[in-house]
Length: 340
Image (tube, rainbow, N blue to C red):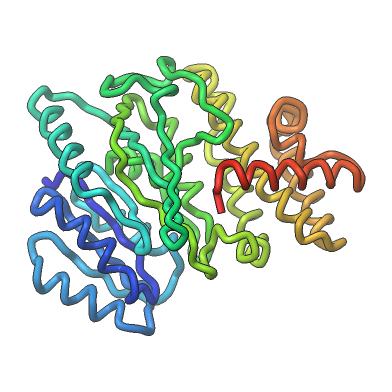
């Protein structure tokens, strides 16, 4: 069995996918790379096939009709044979030296028969064109190199949460959690990052600067203008994430995880609310009201927690004055944390 399956969903990625795949190849035959050509119309499929031809023991290629990022992840998970599963977007890349250290650690766990359901590593917000980078770490949440459970974790900082870029899930955990992402929908990485968490019993944080998360393309989904254009998809995913887990049930066993899940839903609600405010039309204000009413109607306990005890409540302040406070806070946070 391979140690890690890397799935690389690609759509018209010819100009940057090789940078990504070349870093994954540094894992050699201990890794499996599944390139999913998601209905590309450029040379993406040809480039992928060349990799499979040159590295037949490592690279597999799936060609499929366009279904969006979620469909690419689904295809990779369906065919994965590795012990761990990692999604790497085609415009991102891994630090090769750090990948080697991870593989060495997995080998040590194998020798000691240690099961780790979730590996957490650092990631880098890489503003490559501007020559700027911001490192995101988790040393305040998890003890480094210590296998632990949810009841052992510390407190997350406001800018800190578990995103797809930081996570290596065991493949069997993802399958047991029933992860299946919606097609033709952006922002589904939030579902992937959160739905499996209640199925995770052991976690290990490795202080490795592993994943370079590229920021800077004008068409990137996290670009503010693009997100505003795709706000309906952001709202859809926010609703799906709010229903990913029975937080009351999780709270009885893992109260710290329940707090984290609530906090993450709060962040997603805040993102949706803020970008609807940025759009500013009467239709956008109606969608903002409908989103909050959706949470209220489906889970009143969650609704009141979000409104009264979390950051998302500050994005749902009444009137124009409240909207102004929300937007001013958002612009300040964006400048500090450089998240788009």
